[in-house]
Length: 257
Image (cartoon, rainbow, N blue to C red; front, side, top):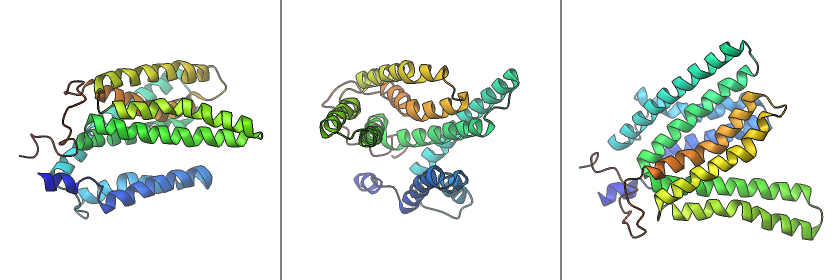
């Protein structure tokens, strides 16, 4: 059991390559040409297709079950989202932002599959903690880059950096509390998500931005927080900081005998 758990701490090489392709494709689509998003698509869907064809055999039984469960979740949520989007467009009798609406569906599919797989692989506490660390790091880079671009005075720059840490510090604090008090952290994450919804999402609704663009941005912003919050609220363990998490990186007891 220990050897099996230890062996799955790091993703296998195909997973690392796939993740690299996704990141590369997103960057290329942002800074080179939007059509290069196909590179991210190859990374996101290519390994799964190869596994189903039997050409890539890099997963054990537990990983296969987790991947299939993630795929089923993505199918259900993605299918429902597609129906709602198409129905909404038909109801409004408009074709505005059709490419962005398709992008919204892709984002929902990708994020649903990703979080389902991560929750099955790491469990709610470790998934939420690592998502929050990643989320906070991206926000820190974004905020500091904004400060660098807007501040010419040294004192103003230092004040901006200090304020940026005030903005991102809660994410790192919540990443730490997720392993100790999961349900309280989950409630806090849903509260933060609601505040983000009021502060950043609602004002955009009255702006000149197209609804499809707003929804894509808000999905990327809020889904990690909401998914982590719900997963922590559903955590079966109590809010006990002394709880033994030695099995969090391993398979559930009903999967590995």
